[in-house]
Amino acid sequence: MFEPPMERCPVCGDYVILVQAQYECARRQQCGQDAGCPLQRAFAATDFYRVPEGAAAPPRPGR
Image (cartoon, rainbow, N blue to C red; front, side, top):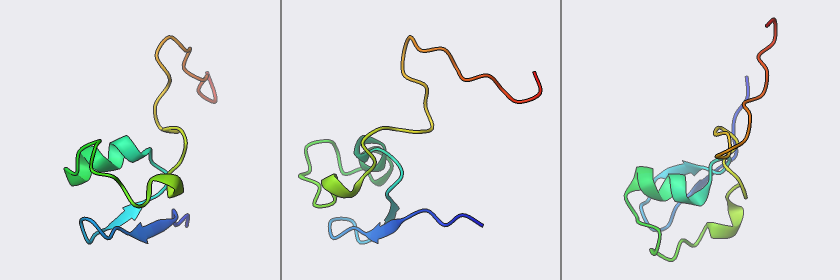
């Protein structure tokens, strides 16, 4: 089983998953983008679960 890296956020007090982009965490925790996130450098530099706008989605296996 895969356990993503997590860290306790000193702002909201919850454990947050660090493989998401910081803006996604801010949206989920309702911190806002300008909250001055103390974990900013710990988050993934990109959102791995979304395809960038204008990019082709990767092919699915078996298709």
